[in-house]
Image (cartoon, rainbow, N blue to C red; front, side, top):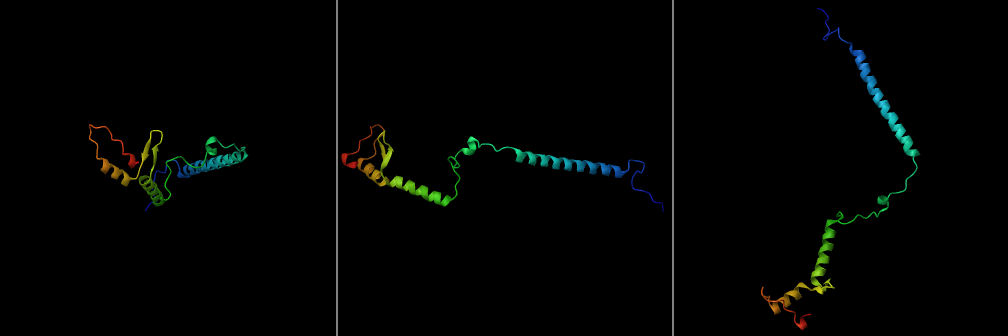
Length: 129
């Protein structure tokens, strides 16, 4: 039996090609390390900068904000809405618009009736305010 290699023996030997690839990879690694070292050295040598206007701005973001506790936010919203619906207050004081409790508004509407589409709005009775 003759010993025959499993590849073409007249081509370029594999050893120098492997050494060339290993040399290129080592140059890439050395270059990256040199770049990192230079960047780190110059970063420490740079004088401190004054903070920009963006950095000096308030840390509280504008609305809408993210909810941290959705349940507590919903409860607070419902309480504010309930207080608005059950209380008296001005909607637009300059225009003379106010809000009243729903029960009172329903009683006034039942006492005065619903105006027709053709009729003008009826002023509330004196005792109704």
